[in-house]
Image (cartoon, rainbow, N blue to C red; front, side, top):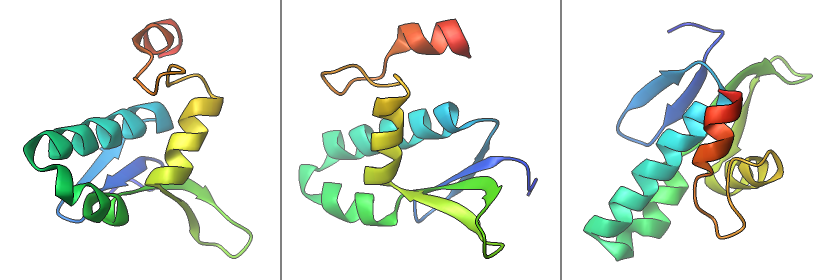
Length: 95
């Protein structure tokens, strides 16, 4: 794996991404597809999902973001609409 990539992990697979927005979009879509299949597994899915940053913290470990932390980061950066949907317009403008 490339150490300069953002990594999305869902407990079963690992996906490399070029940026946080793309890693978050995969996380968001994976979560919502899982909910469509079985709404009861949502809480279990959230526990397993995380995004790993290529940036290291003060202790030399890569920063990780839980579903909640990644969603908050997506909200503050405009990747989500106020209704909690992916902001496609923002992706087209910036990425």
